[in-house]
Amino acid sequence: MKKILCIIAFVAFAFNGLAQDGKLRLGANIGFTTGGNNSDLVIGADLDYLFNAENKRFQIGAASGLFVVTDFNGIVLPLAFAGRFDATDKINLGVDAGYGIGINNANNGFYFRPIFEYKLSSNIALRASYTGIGGGGYLNAGIMFNL
Image (cartoon, rainbow, N blue to C red):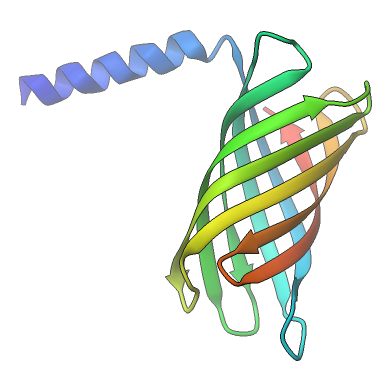
């Protein structure tokens, strides 16, 4: 039990020390599926944690979220590495790559998401993206907030 508490304390201190360098962002999106005979509505939540790389225009980190395909109640939890590039003061380009875990009526598979963001302010950005999971995909539009 003491070993577990020591490990938890070590991880908590490590995240606390890294929190000064990183940027936590939370967002929401809405979109529709691509492919197939009909399009299904997709509602999602996004979460990413990014660190500045050596060059201040690049950020790397982790991304996750939750996507719900409304017509068949398919739920996907993506776990991914994230990369962002500040193309201009207002435009960010990025990509998330990892694995999508199907929780309910959805398939597991490789997760890939190219992203385009337009900054409205230093804390708010509009996001457009394509999300590919396994053999299916979604077109999304949403908003991101810096926490």
